[in-house]
Length: 259
Image 1 (cartoon, rainbow, N blue to C red):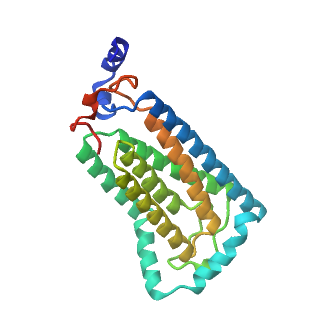
Image 2 (image 1 turned 60 degrees about the vertical axis):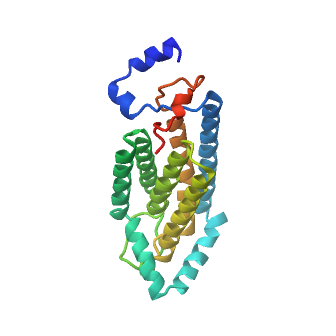
Image 3 (image 1 turned 180 degrees about the horizontal axis):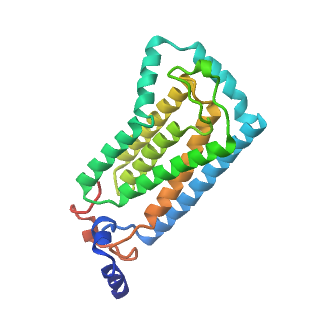
């Protein structure tokens, strides 16, 4: 470690050193690659979102599938499927989801003794929900007809889906924060499968229960890519205990925080 890096590190408050700084930073090319990936995700997500939004505002593109998909979901409802969908909706809703996230964060902090990635996850979810609330007010899109809503009338705006965006941010950003610290390809594939299945189930639930259009779901997934990109950029910028140019072998020792 260079003298300047040592001096800079020593000036940080102890709580930054203990709970935010990480001991195994990536080398500089890897950090640059993460920043590039983050920028690409933000551009991709924003482009997809504005394409969906343009279709919604002009009643074209993917929006033409909104009504057919809604009608198909209503026609294929059953008592058994409705029960399953209601359970998923409750777990991923404004009461259930915060409980799940709080338990997950508490266990993560307890297990790792570190707060940086938990902070990134929390900020990502807050950013996603803030975007959902702001965009919903700006667009002001109505939900599907009230007679098709199965668990009570929801008078709020439809675009985008807050349920889907919240779950997507939690699973996708959380998955990145787990696998980005040197986890195996098997762990990466597992996190990807969990994210795809989890987001897919919640999206299906919102369509089945009659609270969202297909384009609401597409907009939420697009926004989640933007949030993921921002989370990756923030995480890559994180405080480091060792300079990127000189990662030490000790930084990869069994004692390194990798949870």
